[in-house]
Image (spheres, rainbow, N blue to C red):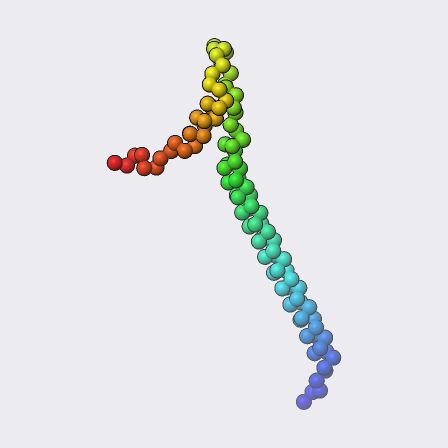
Length: 98
């Protein structure tokens, strides 16, 4: 039998442990990058949905459209506001049913 070289075995074990730690660290960093990309894509989609919901609220113009043919004042601001608010609640999903 040949004698065991304990120092060499310990050195090889340390080298293998260091390689495994680097491999695990690489896997973790790759997965964190992937999760970050997924989170960013989800956030972008959520912001786009929120923007499409909020856009009509900020696109409303209380002033009457400018007409070069008529100089009439048109309906008042309160009338236009009332008509706009009624328009939000006008849709009835059961209106087409008999």
